[in-house]
Length: 269
Image (tube, rainbow, N blue to C red):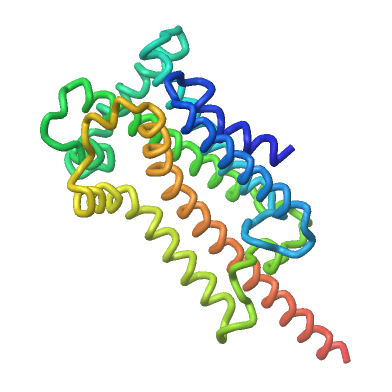
């Protein structure tokens, strides 16, 4: 089921938004099959691979909801430009309203619109602003949802055994001196990157590519995936940092509990 859901979310934009060429459709199909196969193998294997927090629901489920919601929302907005409906017009209006509210000096949405090169029309700027505003709003709401789960004690679930090796396969707990200090350091790095990436990404685009050609906005699929990546990656890093900080707290509490139990045993003896 996880593999099928991954395949569905990858192919959703190409199914909802018309105009994709045959070669591009084949590429999307191959990427979707590869992503589905990777997900199936990762979750069926007993040993951990690359997917983090695979045994600590609902972390990956919330990230999937973020990715799926962003892709579907932007796809419906783009579909509404050729085949308008009540839902697409509503989402477009919300995106335009949120984009205008977030379009203030030095904001991530303003920096995204400034990546457009000369020759961009007001319609091009409004399109990019609405898409960026909707994607950024979805990311913020998802992070609030995850923070709510953590504050209420829903993650990790009470009574659930958290295996660091299974849930953090790329983190080696045996290397280094203090696992708690390393977890907290990595958590701070991820949170910092998650906060800065929406600001740094437009600057990197300006530096490397000289900006975004307004003609590229005529390709709705490129716009959908680019804006989705711009909003999803920082939010994912931010959530990962919060989760790693929570794991560090759990390890510290477990050590404190073990020390207390050991002291009580020695006192009883």
